Amino acid sequence: MTPTPPPVAGLLLAAGGGRRLGGRPKALLGLRGRPLVEHAAQTLHDGGCAPVYVVLGAAAAEVRVHAGLTHCTLVDNPGWPDGMGSSLRAGLAAVAATDAGAVLVTLVDQPRVGPAAVSRVLTAYRDGAQLAAASYDGERGHPVLFARPHWQGVARAATGDRGARAYLREHAAAVRLVECSDVAGPEDIDTPDDLALLEAGLPGSRGLPGRARHPMPPPH
Image (cartoon, rainbow, N blue to C red; front, side, top):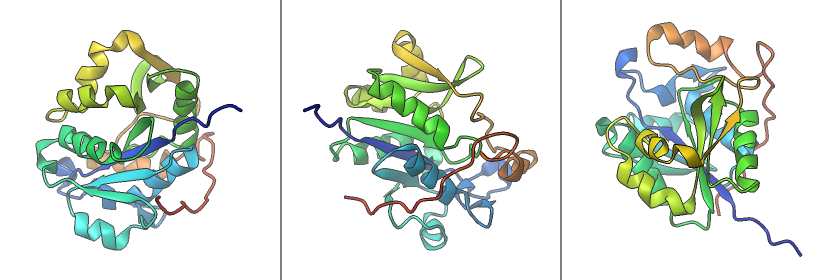
């Protein structure tokens, strides 16, 4: 009998305060009538990740009230003003307590990253890759996957707003790039001009595949 592969946890970094958006926390931006963080968490689930962890920071109490994240594990990052690196470290520390064999990381402010991109990167892991990332016309982007043996190194290298960039650059030869430009897009929401992505760039529009809506199972 073929052994069951270890689960892959989804890790959504959603702590940013939206400084260039006038202090509007990105997690609470509206998308089809619901907070953006809710859609991003559902994307991880629909793409095949379980369990799903969400790192909160700015307006964390409001996110807990307004976003439907009952079936996710929420991780508070009081150090979120220090940058994305602190959220990545907090998320990895939380996931380390599970039996996950890998973690797949996405960012809350990339609405064109849908379940199809998540699924493709997961497939690379199932095929043996220990480090994998979506690529867009050959450029590395998100989602990014790290097998468990890499977690400590990623956490050590995650400082400021760099997240895992330094670690991925150091291990570039081992990163399997998975082309996703036909099903997703890497654009993020940083400024008011980018808010148009919340409607125009969703998976399901402009030829991108739609999202199957299935309720997330409760965490184990």
